[in-house]
Amino acid sequence: MITLNGRRGVLALAATQIAGWGSTYFIPAMLSVPIAEDLGMRPAFVYSGVTIQLVIGAFAGTWIGRHVDRHGPRAILMAGSACMGVGLLCLGLSGGIAGFVAAWAIMGLGMPMVLIQTPFAAAAMLVPGAARRAIGLMTLIGSLTTVLFLPAMAVLDGLLGWRGICLLFAAVQLAVCVPLHAAIRVRPIERDADTPTAEGAADGIADPVQRRRAFWAMAVAFSCVGFVTWGLPIHLVDLARAYGESEALSVAVGAVMGPAQMAARAIESAFGQRVPILRLGFYSLMTIFAALALPLLFGGTATLLMLMVIGYGLGAGVNTIVRAIAPLVVFGRSGYATVLGKLGLPLNLVFATAPFAIAEAIERGGPAAGVALCAAAILVSMAGMAQLRRIAGPSGGA
Image (cartoon, rainbow, N blue to C red; front, side, top):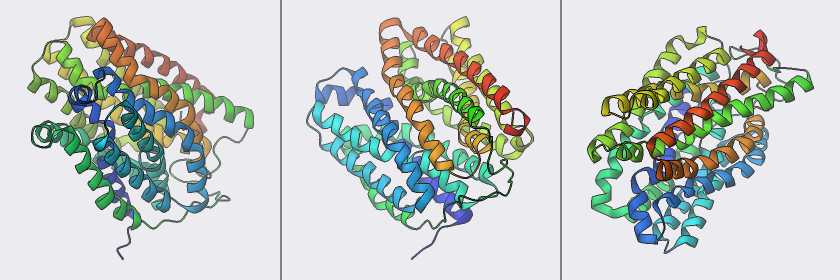
């Protein structure tokens, strides 16, 4: 049997992240209209599938994190890919709203197992002395998701229909992702590890009161930026359409996010080690806010929409790394997956409102209302990040 560890394991995780995000989260971005017409629902309601996924994932994440810290990530990763495959199979065969909801609930159970939480913890275990670089590499490769999956779904919709696409994606999860996860071999981080690493001291902030304050400041900062990074990407195509752009240009607007994120993550991988992680997080939020301000101030022309998506992609690409590494720096390596799971509860509940809330804002108030809602969330996130930096101080990567 093939064994994947170290850098090879990280590359395998990156590949399954692309498959996981592309085959679940981005389905409404391209297929909301045919799904809605077939199942007899409003297109905006199709985005509630992601909301269901997030709510279920929020409550499952804490237990999953504890299990990963105690027993390692392999079994959880395999189970997660199986859940995604079964959920996609159910979605492709669904005959109405009940089947639609059940399919997304199954995928929600798999979400913390294979999207972000467990893969990031697994990467930290695969290369414990260079977790920031490993997670940066994963997110760098993961930037290819929109480049690969949005155009692919646009083509496959005409060939297979939305149901055929779901069945194809289910086969990818079961036949490709499950075996890749089965090949990963990694030991959990020892609970008594106390050796400082490049990501910070093993124990992070020691004072319990300061740890609680840091936790909630982090929750505010990450939940508000996550409202945007979870809600906006799947609406970029619809946003461009709402501004009056052609179908081809709207797909191009959505697809350009991936290269922008990849560029940002490549720069972070090369030079980001020189900048403390919380400071880098604040800079990324400033970049996202400036990008969102462009169409609000100057209108939604094709050029400005492209610039907005590029700026957003640059900021969001770096922020994904920040959200993975900041808990490692602030709270320490021991129990890292558990911390991610605890953060996942408040974060995912906020994230769950994003796809439907932004869809409603665009549908009722026009594209500018959706962008303004995102910009307001980023301002709150900046306030939370500023507070986190004050609590963490120099030792916390501020």
